[in-house]
Length: 62
Image (cartoon, rainbow, N blue to C red):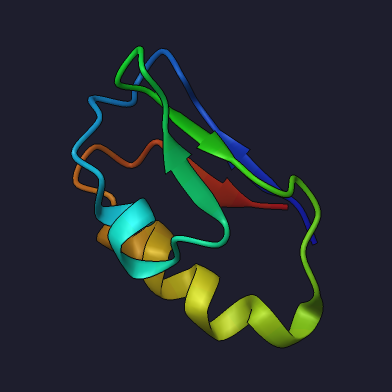
């Protein structure tokens, strides 16, 4: 499973980083940077919560 972040849509609200700080970071530019790009299937429930919590829908799972 892979996290995809649309950096052109992200507004830096930080919900993703607050919910999953080991998987997301808001950079100095105020835009999300997923880390790592590929995640374990066991993290799917948390990642679905994070994706659903993004106020500008800048995140998706593939």
